[in-house]
Image (cartoon, rainbow, N blue to C red):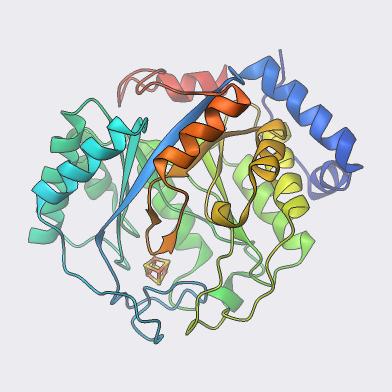
Amino acid sequence: MTEIRHDWTKEEISEIYHTPILDLIFRAATIHRENQDYGEVQISSLISVKTGGCPEDCAYCPQAARYQTGVNVHAILPKEEVVAAAQKAKAGGASRLCMGAAWREVRDNRDFDKVIDMVKAVNELDMEVCCTLGMLTEAQAQRLADAGLYAYNHNLDTSEEDYKRIITTRTYDERLQTLEHVRKAKISVCSGGIIGLGETVEDRISMLKTLSNLPKHPESVPVNALVPVKGTPLADQPRVSVWDMVRMIATARIIMPKTVVRLSAGRTEMSVVEQAMCFMAGASSIFAGEKLLTTPNPDFDTDMAMFQLLGLKPREAFKNGRPNQVTEQQAVEA
Ligand code: SF4
């Protein structure tokens, strides 16, 4: 059984990250097989329940109000529209619906009440419900948990050292505090980052260290490749190489063996062969559906064809139990 560690050093992570690529993939694939059903891939679908007009200044994000990106700004969606999208996603094989709102933080207002209603409604469809709404207080996290929220996404994006270059309107510590609130409410934690922001390899390693040294590993770690968007400060960033994605995924897989590592934004740019490399390297989840918040994503049919080709099957919802049973976490810690 693989040892679950929370004391990884940067040196150790760096050594793993820089292993010759074929050895790295082999090691990650071995750990994947020892710790998870590697033939299964969890499919999450993402819906933007409130788009654009965000007061934050995340340098990669088309939804920040201060950048001219042409994003179609809309107020909070009606519940019926979200339920219809969830049903469509479920029919397409998704076991989880992630609802995103372009907020700096959750406010205790009517919009939050609406999100709570959406969480309840999607939960009734027997889907895992995830939200990404910005910063949360402990009480708000508890309210979401009581409504049946399964997971909360709150990415670290980059390293603590690099954070100010990417976001100036909040701190790394605030980020970590929200993760603590989510954990306390016994909601499954989803937290990862983005590569291709102009960060160094040391930044990637530092972010992986933070994630793997949390008191409990996040149940999901999304690894995103920047999709540069015109009008954002990072519009001219070069695309990251697929080998960088493979190295990130494999390193995350090795240091957090039970975690679901999610191949997230940037998948549109990848061929099936490249995505297969990521699955070999330990990716065990994807985002599916037509749009990943505001950037394009392969549609369900294309993904199902890929699953068939690679002999993968979608993971069913609640495989590790219902919210607040904490069995997914127990699995992580086992
Ligand atoms: S990433 Fe989130 S918090 Fe940052 S600008 Fe975009 S919507 Fe706002």
